[in-house]
Image 1 (cartoon, rainbow, N blue to C red):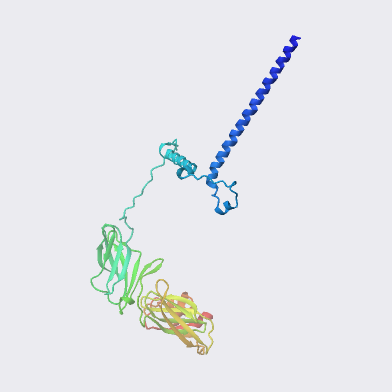
Image 2 (image 1 turned 90 degrees about the vertical axis):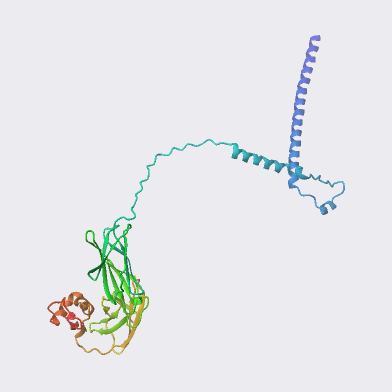
Length: 387
C-alpha cells in the first residue's frame, strides 16, 4: 500500500513541474511579445511626430473635452533628433571615405609603345622650279612680282622674252621684284628662270596694262591646266566690251566678233538661251560661233554678249536687238583678219570645225595657212560644208 501511495505522489509532482515549465515559457513569450509591441509603438510614435500635422482649431471644437488630447510639443533639437542623427552619420561616412579610406590600387599592365617618329620639315625646303606667288598691278602702273625658289639663290625675271632683272631669294626662298618705272599700256608675259641650273618656271603670268589705268588692267596666271585670274578689273568703261559684227549664215550658224579685255571670257546668248563662250585674245579680239537653227525673216531677236571675270561673274553686258532680214542665197561670206587671228579659229567659228581651215586657205589662195595678216579680207565658203 505504501508503495503505491509513493508512486502516486511522485507522478503528481512530475506533472506539476511540467505545468510550471509550460506556464513559465508562455509567460516569457508573452513578456517578449509585449516588449516588442511596446518598442514598435514607441518607434512609430517617434516617426509620427514628423508626419502628423497639428490639430486645427476647428477640429478641436467638434471634440469633447474628454476626447481632446493636446500633443506635447518638443522644442529645438529634441523635436528633430532623428534626421539630425542621419545627417551626422552621412557626414561621418563622407569624412571617412575622403580622408581615411584607402582603396586597394589596381595595377594595369600597359604594353610598351614605340616612341613616335617626328619628321622635321625644313621651312626653307627647296622647290624644284621657280614659282609665282603674287603679280599685282599698282595704282601708279608699277607691277610687283613675288615668288619663291630655293634659299639664297638667284632668280631672273623674264618679260616678253627678255631678262629684265635678277633677284636674290632670302633664307626662306622668297623674293620680290618691282621695276623702278611704270609699265607702258600693253600686254606683257612674265616668266621666271632659276640662274643656278638654268631652271625655267612652268608657270607664266599674262599682264594687260590698260591705258585707262590699273582699274581696267588684268593679271592672269597661266599653267598647263588653264589660267587663273590674279587681278580682275575693278571698273569698266565704254569700249571694254564691243560687238563689231554679227554674221548669220544660211547653215543656221551665227558668228559674233568684237573686242574686250584680253584673256577674259565672253559668252553669247540668243533670246536668253546660252549658246557658248570664247576666250578673248591677247590683242583684245574675240570671235564666237554657235548653231542657232533657222531664224525667221522679219522677226525680232535679242542677242546678249557678256564679259566674265575669273570667277565666272558677268562684269559687263551688251544687248543687241535686230530684225532678221531676208537671206540673199549667197553661199559665201567675208571676214577681215584681225591681229592675233588664225585660220583654225576662223574655220571653227564659221565652219563649225577648225580642221576645215584648208577650205578657207584654198578659196583665198593662201600658200602658208600659218601666215595671215591683219586687215586681210578672207572669203569664207560657208556652203562648202553642206556639199
